[in-house]
Length: 172
Image 1 (cartoon, rainbow, N blue to C red):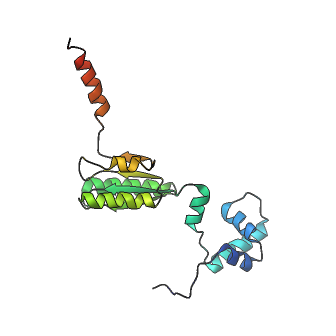
Image 2 (cartoon, one colour):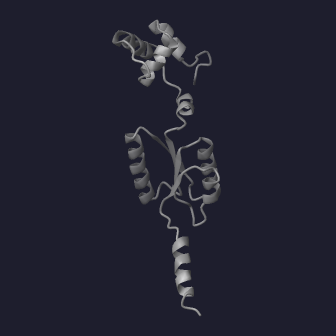
Image 3 (tube, rainbow, N blue to C red):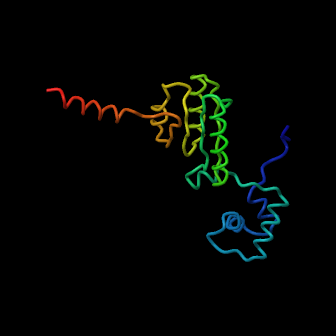
């Protein structure tokens, strides 16, 4: 259980412990935009270690305009193909300094919708999605402008339209 008396360590705490300004702490953490003397940089790094400071990823995401987080929604993680795919995607995300959040719908369409909404509310940078059935919530995702990739599905609409036009050309 978290101690209610404890509070998050801030950059101000690190600056106080290192005997520097908050701006210098920020320069060290973010590698710039101004150079920091090696001795000062080491004091800041030591203060970070001593205080247990961890950067606030939510604040960093706001400043960057990206969360470096993606969502993966699967129908059922116990499916060997799905679990293997999830493992490979997780490994790749980690290798690129990104986070992949997994949502397992448990073969339930309503839960799938809730997972999509949950990940969209978390401002993921994109969704990887394989649906419980052939009626995925594409419109829901598209309405947010969030990039997404449908996995294990084929969009035949354009091909069908082309074939229909071709067939219609033979009818006089």
